[in-house]
Image 1 (cartoon, rainbow, N blue to C red):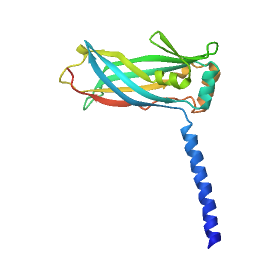
Image 2: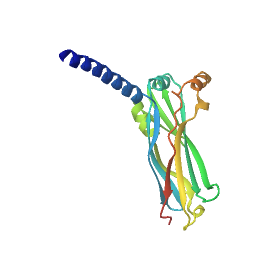
Image 3: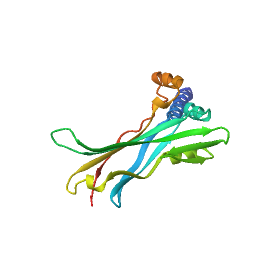
Image 4: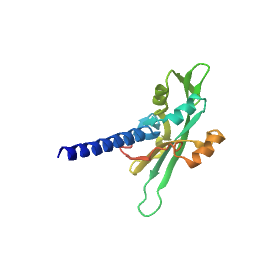
Length: 191
C-alpha cells in the first residue's frame, strides 16, 4: 500500500511541476489587451479614454534594450449597425505611439502626438504606452441623437516599422504578433 502511495505521489508531483512550468511559460508571453474604453463629450466633440495592458516577453524586452524602436497603432472605429446590410462606417481613425530605449541617457522614451516622455524603467514606459487620454475621435454633429452606434478599439504592434531582420523572423514566430482583441461597446446617451 505504501509503495502505491509513493508511486502516486511521484507521478502527481511531476504532473504538478509540469503544470507550473506551463503556466510560467504562458505568463511570460507578450500580450496586449484592452482593459476599458469610453467616450466622453467635451465641448463639440467626443473624446476617447482607454487603458490597455501590455506585457513583453524576454525577446521583446531584450530587443528594446538593444535599441529596437517599437511602433504601436491604436485603431478606433464607430459604426452604425444595420440589420440587413453591412454596418455604416461613421469614423475610422488611428494613431501611433512609439516606444524606444535611449542608451546614452538610459531612459525609455514614449512618443505620442509629437510629444515625448522619458522614463527610468520599462514598466513605467509600458504604463504610459497603454493609456489613451482625451483623444478627439468624432465631432458631435457627426452622430445623430436617435441612432444606435457601436464603437470598437484595438492596439497592435506595427511590424512593418521593425528592422528587416526582425520582420523576417516575425514571419515564422508568434513572438512579434502583438495584437489586442477588438473591444466593442455600444455608444449610449448621445447628447
